[in-house]
Amino acid sequence: GFESPGSPQDPTGRMAAVASQALEPALSFPLSQSQAWTDLQPIPQDDGPNPVVPIAYSPHFVDVMNYFRAILKKQEYSPRALALTKEVIKVNPANYTGWLFRRECLLALKCDLKKELAFIDEIAQVSSKNYQLWHHRRVIIQELGEASSELKATTSALLEDPKNYHVWAHRQWVLRTFNLFDKELDFVDVLLEQDIRNNSAWNQRFFVFKNTTGFTREVIKSEIEYTFKALMKTPNNLSPWNYLRGLIKQEKFDMMEDVNKGTAGIYKKDSECAECLAFLIDLALEYPTAKKLKTASKMCENLRDNLSKIRAKYWDYQRDNVEKKLEEVEKKAS
Amino acid sequence: MTYSALCALQILGDDLSRVDKDAIIQSLKLLQRENGCFRCATTEEDDMRFMYCACVISAMLGDWSGVNKDAAVKYIVESQAFDGGIGLRIGAEGHGGTTYCAIASLVLMGCLESLSDKAGLVRWCCNAQGEGFVGRPNKPPDSCYSFWIGATMKMLGIYDLSNKAKNREFNLKCQTKYGGFGKHPDVLPDPLHSYFGICGLSMMGFDGLLPVDPVLGITERAAKSNLMLKHPESKMKE
Figure 1: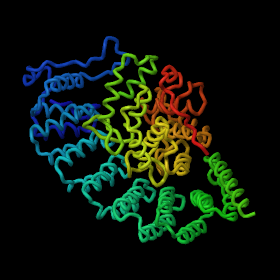
Figure 2 (figure 1 turned 135 degrees about the horizontal axis):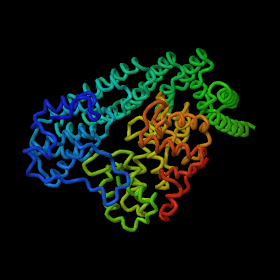
Figure 3 (figure 1 turned 30 degrees about the horizontal axis):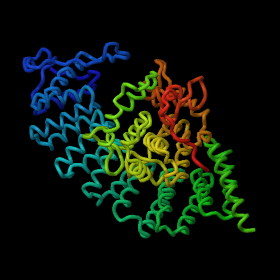
Figure 4 (figure 1 turned 90 degrees about the vertical axis):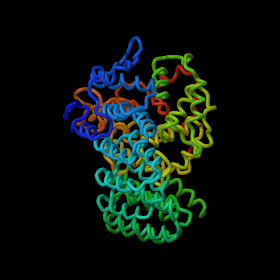
């Protein structure tokens, strides 16, 4: 039978449970003693004549991989090979050859790819920060040619692990490939409601506009409003300040008044908000006047000495930039 | 894997004369997509990690004929996010690891000046300074970013804007009683965080460690023996 639940490779027993539900034939380990595998010559790993840092593989791992190498050499696409790939993935979920050969088996055997999604879901429970798993999922979806399951799947994954980079990457691909942007802003709102500091969610917001309407004047104006609402709740939150910086850079941006008003509101609420001061300094450098630059210089000193001491060297650098700009501005004026 | 293997050979002082360079360079041609990015294998995904691998491989083998530099640079420039950081792919969130891969690739290709928002990247890196470096805004510090962000700052010529004392303190807290480093204090060590934690400490200049080449992620000693590793001056112009 399989390794009993609670083994290092499968601490929760979930992998064993998945395998037992499989349509592939149940494998009996060790394969070296299984009647169903006597036709194959297992191939040991070639570590060379003087292995320098040989890994202490478990006997089970060695058994599985020896037979996998044999299957690979033979290029055998069969139910037992498919079953073996499941075990290969179980013992090392990052084994891209295992995932690739599994895909080849699935296609050769004309398996129901929708069922494969369920297998991926199960593995994701124990190994969600896994490039190979998400690539496998992408290829399966590509083969299926439709992604009706994917918003739901990535939504539940993100509600549980809201910053999982792999899931976000997969979701972005799904949205772009199948044009499913419709309700994405609502989803972003849900996540920001959960955690207004979720940088991934703020990035997704930008992604939606960029790939749908683009940053029209209307979008920029309403997003500025949206951002300041968020900043009122958490003024010292870098993500919305960065989002604001992104909006200002857009071609159709011409609402500096709104930005100045909004920023003044935040400053009024909290004059010691480091991120607010940082933003005002950036604005002074981007849209310089002598007055703004003189204020910015003092802000740099305040950040350096009091409000953001950990980045003291950066504030000195910014202060130098401000002073240089001030010199330029005053020279032009004279 | 090819990147790691070549680095390992480099570190061991091998002259790479037994490496089938043509085969590797030809394979890079097959792995670069029309959009300029690289896959790790023809059946697998493409992203910024493999952009970096392709560039280091080309630099180590002294042959860039497998890389369409214009397309590669275009891809990297387009991948810079609105906050100044660079993501895994176009549209993805700016991230310490992928920012490193992107910037090192530009340096190796001699195209650092192609970046459209240099000030943004400088700000993004400096904002990553917390008790230690973080990989994305509003995330906790992690020892491996002492390399990813640290090396990026070295390449940009702004490493001195980081808080070396704090970063050193953080990395050393990530050292465990078993030896090695974990991502945070009080977690188990692993090879990745040990490697990058030590590289990070080396860049900080403490603890008597050999200097690390920020572009290649190996020591200067290891890089020195390969005369083909003459990558252009990495300092960004003011």
